[in-house]
Amino acid sequence: MSRKKQTYQLIKGLTQGEKRFFTLYMSKYSKKKNNSIKKLCDIYDSNTEWNEQNIKKSLKKEKLDGFTSVLNNRLLDKLITGLRIQSTDNIIDLSINRFVEEARILFQREIFELAIDKIRKAKNLAYSSEKYDKLLEICSVEKLILVRVVNNQQFREFCIKSSKEIDEIIKSIVNKNAYRELSDEMFYLYRKLGIPKNNEEKSQLKNLTNHPLLKNIKRAKSISAKSSFYFIYTIYYLSIQEKKKALNTIDNHLKIIEANNQYFRNNLDQCLAVLNNALFIHSENNDKIALFETIDKIRKLQTVHKIENTYFNRLIFETTYSMELDYYIKNDELKAAKNLVPEIIRELKKYRKYGWSLDRFLTMAFGISLVYFYDNNIEESHIWIDKILEYENKNSNLQILSFAKILDLILHYQRHNKSLLLYRSKSVTRYLKKNNTLHEIDKGLIKMLHQLSDNKNPKKYVTIFLNLFARSENSYTKMYYLHYIKIEALCTALENKKQLKIKQ
Image 1: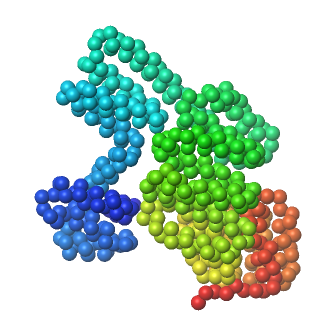
Image 2: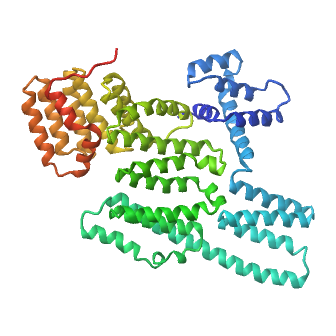
Image 3: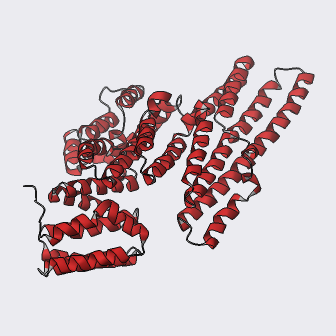
């Protein structure tokens, strides 16, 4: 992606408040009313889509086309600086740094009492948000200031106290890192093994939970360490299918995060990840009440904690809407799914300028395609499948991409694209085989579509496929077909030679 397009995306992602702040910020550095950097910013902002040709015409009209690259780099630098300055009061690290730097400046001017006040604000903020690395620097600056303020005996007492404090901070850092390493190892095993298939795989997970630090939550010295402790056991219980224990662990995890508002505000992603695990379990249990209670809780997070954060808003949208649509599809609630689709499409357009989480986008796009498919709107269904297949080389969510390719073949059959179906089925087979997602069910479906395209006896070949489906041992792929492709309903339609209508 070009530097100019990156600058454009950054501008289009600004809130109205951020745009107002940037205009004021730029006015400080401009002697002329219509400075070139601000003009370039306005040109980018006036284009609803990235269109290089239209932008070049606007630049030429404003006589800026001769040195656009230089101006663009300056604009990008000013944008980032402006956002950093505006965010100082909201981002913990920047706030701590500001207090420390202000304390240093006041110390150099020999305004010691105010300098001590600033450094203590920095220390309180660092402790409440568990910024232990910052605390080491703060303790150093605090000692630098106090040596000029207190008498010799007081300073000696402070040094003894400070030395013990630093020892405790270092212990907390070591403890936090140890739990993080265990957490990373458990997550690695979970991604590698999934649900353990034998005793050897189960023992790998069990052995990790036998680590001395995981024997008791009291060994965790900080909220961060406790959070890692609960995350490890949530993943462990999910792996061995102990869902009730996993939910109890999630409840304990949420309690420690929500008990400290400062920690929560500084770890929004972590809180959302915990709730997302709960959503996953409720979905697996098909517990509608618990699922939608959790979705509602997630959507209220920003209101309850009074947080204005576009990035967090986007994560909430992706998490809740993808799970809600998934539930409706799995449970054949087509009317509810149809009502939700326009909302999802509207929100996707809204957040397009900020970017999406690719896995979540693919999940929602596949769900939207299925909703249109079940509603007999083949044209719209194919549009969303094409959006998914644009990312087939990203190797993001291979399972979604694989099933999107299968659905693509079914759609071509419904649209009577016999020659295209035969051609694409070969590439689909190669793709699935290459990514180790080609199963007997997939082979059987592709073969059936070929035979039905040749106008062979539908009842015979559909029966053969359903028998193959019944005998299949791949439970994950089978579940996916049952929940999403609805293969039995599809086979009934194919057998009766019913063709789905194409929206004109």
